[in-house]
Amino acid sequence: MREGESIFVHSYKHDGRLQRKWPARLVRFEGSLITLEGFFSEEVIHPILGTIKAGTLSTEFFWTDRWYSIFLFREPSGELRNFYCNINTPADLADGTLSFVDLDIDVLVRPDFSFQILDEEEFERHSELYNYPPVYHRRVQESIEELISLIGERQFPFSLTR
Image 1 (cartoon, rainbow, N blue to C red):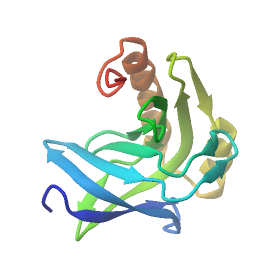
Image 2: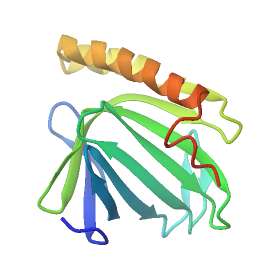
Image 3: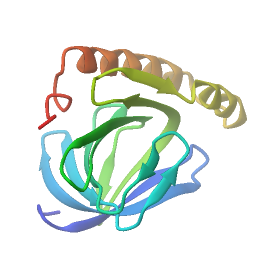
């Protein structure tokens, strides 16, 4: 894959079911970090994020060795809207598709860097339903702790607020 190429992102559930997919553009693939750029062509009403306006930009950070991804959303005007972190399996980029398994828990980070951990009950429910392996529980906890540290210390990509 080359920088600037269009790809698709596929978010799966543990049972292999495709949960969501969207187009993106590969910005950079360096080391374990994959940076994508997305664009909301239509307004989206999200139950937690509220109204995401058409024209909102999404810079998406995935890693092939980390159990989370981070989305930086900017309003069409360019101002920081929020960060949204997904706890997921490490990303795999092959044949024009970046794929991962979504592990339910998310962290919403507001522009003032206050944050909220979301969907912990969903993780527990799906853990039983899909019989998540023990490594998922350990990696989820480690990922939440790492994200909280990155947020608090404004480390990359939380340093990209301008």
